[in-house]
Amino acid sequence: MYEEKRKIMGLLGAIEAGGTKFVVAVADEKFNVVERTSFPTLDGEKTLDQVIAFFDQFDNIDAIGIAAFGPIDIVDGSQTYGYVLDTPKRGWSGYDFLGRMKSWRDIPYYWTTDVNGAGWAEFETGAAKDVNNMVYLTVGTGVGAGIVSSGKLVSGYGHPEAGHIFLQKHPEDKYEGHCPFHGDNCLEGLAAGPAIEERWGISAKDIPDDDIAWKIEAYYLAQAALDYTMILRPEKIIFGGGVPHRETLFPLIRESFAEQMSDYLEVPDLEEYIVPVANGDNAGILGCFYLAKTLV
Image 1: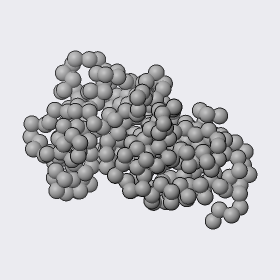
Image 2: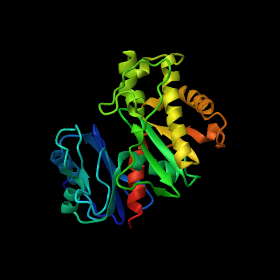
Image 3: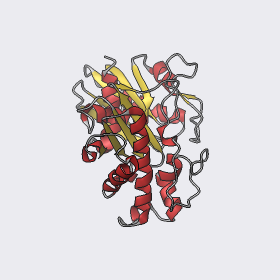
Image 4: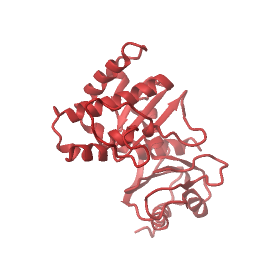
């Protein structure tokens, strides 16, 4: 499949490393995709064998952006920088992802989380392209956030775990929570896709638009947006992932946000402040290209 190497100048590489699926691609300096493929996520070694086989087609890749499922160590200088940390995904805990790539070809790599990758795409060319401060929240199997402040991705001792902020429960919600660490205390435990399905005993996609399930979901997502607003004062909050695909959710989030804010802080018009992802399912791979470009 990859016998003949391609000699194309100035290529950028992208690895969207998901827990279920990997997407790999190369693009030119103007982000025109040259080739792209995907495959199921196996263990670390077997998956990266496929990643490397794909990139081996191309002799001149200037840099590669990697946006990986976590938790991962993104602190440059740490003994485990570039590693996937403790994860239930078999064959990945303690795996030196970045080290394997560098041993294949020692070029610049931008190493970050999957949600940072998608968030950066929204910052560059998506719903936040006109601002310098934003929060991108993905709500699907889990909940995570990519945060840009003053034009830079936010990290410190590690990457943010904004999906595990603690929330007040909705007064009508008796669900015990899905998070194995925080039960019904954190955002992911109350609002991620598995929590919705376990709480109501039905797939989220089959819940009617007028069901109270969406008012409860909106209450939690609005409360999270409120917390991020209080701490970060972003110019825009963007929701992505499978759960926010439900269009009727956004008016409910905005309404609940206004109620919970209770006129305490001035924020932009809510139709412009709390918005859906603009790059859709391409956000992750685009973000990898954009981040790779910062290295060359």
